[in-house]
Amino acid sequence: MEINLTLIGQLITFAIVVWFTMRFVWPPLMANLDARQLLISNGLAQAAQAATDLEQAHAAAKTMLDEAKAQAQVLLEQTHKRSLVLIDEARSDAQEEGQRMINIAKNEIVRESLAAKESLRHQVASLVVAGATKILGKEINQAANQQLLDDVINQQL
Amino acid sequence: MLSFVSISDASTYVQHHLNHWQWNVITGQFNGDAGFWTANLDSMIVSLFAAVLYMGFFGWVASHIKTGVPGKVQNSVEMVLNFVQKLVVESFHGKSKLIAPLALTIFIWVFLMNLMDLLPVDFLPETLALFGVSHFRSVPTADPNITFGMSLWVFVLLIYYNFKAKGVFGLGREMLTKPFGKWLFPLNIAFRLLEDCVKPVSLSLRLFGNMFAGELIFILIALVPWYVQWTVGGVWAIFHILIITLQAFIFMMLTIVYLSMAQDTH
Image (tube, each protein chain N blue to C red):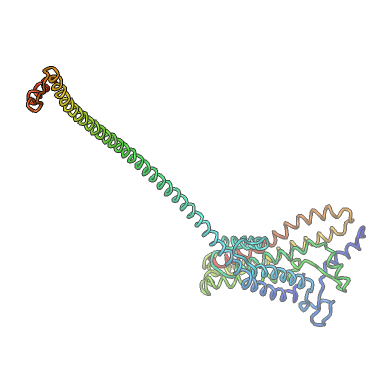
């Protein structure tokens, strides 16, 4: 164990190696580690943010779906009510129309029967005149006896 | 290789393995000890080799970094960096751009130099003997020159941080009055000088002692017959994996702690 020039050599080498490490090894590697640390923490924060966003989006979608469902329900009810109204209207219209038709038919019947009566009356009058002519053997003036005929017919019919 | 050896052969073998490949700076020859003016070429070369390996690898990784998903190589380097950074943050009270790179350098470099201990003891010496190298010790950290070459810097930084944190007067007052109060100031100064000077010595001698002993035991294991070597050799080598990592870690950790203590007031 003797101390000699090797010591000086080692002192110089040591200084150089430490300088090299300080200059070229430690700072870039450490800066890189810090940068990666930042990158990872940012990434994690973004992932957490994304998870929150997703949750919010889910909640929003659910709300919208619920709203849409409620709206559909309302629309359905409205439609149902409307259809009932329409059916009622249609029913009353039909009834009115039917009644109108019935009334028309009734009027027609009345008018027809009146016409028939009138026609019958004429025919009965002529028949009576003709019958009387045959019985009496002479011409009867229908015009002269019209008042009488009418009274008779009106009493009979 | 040696199998059954006589005591004198064994002694020669061990002696041979404990000699450095030296260069006499004064005469320019590769033998002969010139006292201080001698360079242990083996220690210097292996130490430089480890340094270049470390700088090359870490420098390469540092210049090819990706911020996104790192590759396996980058990942392992980052793990080492994180490990060192955590230790420095926990142990060093104060901010410094120097401490963490210093700790990393010590940890990896010392580890690589220690790692040479796991090469078979005769591998490098015998290989280099073919090229005319008479002696070669492959573990630079088993050479006190190398360990002192590192711990002396720690000592310098220790003094620097003391002055930086406390100033000349603060440090002077601390040295005169702590730990026994101002009336025992000669004792205080003696204690303080002893305390601070012991630090680099213990730092380097601990590493040197461990690695030297480890190397010596490997040399002794190489003396037993080849068919038993794997038992003791295997056990010691596996144990040594722990030792070399631990010693590198301890050197780094104590450096951080000493420099942190230099900043704190007593």
